[in-house]
Length: 445
Image (cartoon, rainbow, N blue to C red; front, side):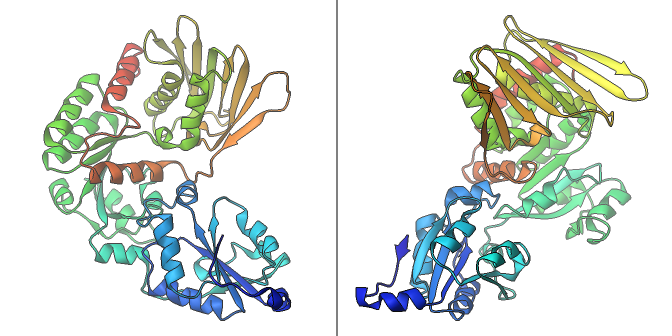
């Protein structure tokens, strides 16, 4: 806690009867809108407590690339002269705890959160305050030229979650699209009721590259190489779907990105989820002993081949890329079902990809001393259960990650580009090439 005002001990009766108000925010790039919100909250009572979100909590809940650090944001709130006490919000569910702990009478928050905190009405009065129109941290970033403009080069009306996920990443603005198909272009710019309501449809790929700082190549596999190459040759960094059609294409593009000192980042959102990182660290640290088998199931996400590549990424992060023998069994009936089998000297993995409505997604990792279960959509992993020792009850590990993971990839892309790097340390070009070689050995490309 960061108390601002101190009362003499003989004022305890006053403190007991005072009307406490609490509000929360990130308060990034503190501006007049923040000031007015705090003024409105202050007017609701006698004592104002302001909760400032921690850097870690902002990232966990998907508010990425906040410009000012926690100390700077706390100082900005203090300088406003409106906070009687400043606390740090560090975890989901803390608001209820704070309301009870501090004896709060009024919970006040901006009206863009309307309805989200009605549950606190059992403990205090909940008031949604009007925001100051036309003023926001995002607007300030645009005015200061700190926004990274992103264009979409695609052949499908599916944006792979880019447009929605970009809304959670500070410093990113998705501007428009180029697609040869007019219907696809219209889906992106035809208005909120028909599509994504982007600013414009570019007349060609060249113009899209010229008017943006980063390009997302979202095309069928056979076209990814030439599209990504054109973007790099136009002098712009690129995010591109994984994988390419051949290992040779990947090697060529990685060399080109290094030559031009431009970022090339492959879209594997799972790679950027903190829960997945923790799982891999724990497995490699012996949490279940020696891993014996990995079994997973998933639907055809976009295409069967891309889903197989995603499964291969997860398996090889757990078991490695060396000495892996890979084969596919393709089953055809009223529903399609592919089973990809990975064989290692001391372990094995089986991945089932199907368009059957009866498929149950999930992943199970069996070891000599325990087991890990990841129910449901493991590729959007936000928790896993670890069974070990003699206890029948698992331990649950989780992060408060939101969405399908693309926002965390975008945040990494902003960082990579700002630092002038050609690749992300999360999924390096070398790691990608090792995985491409595994896919090629199993005829998965």
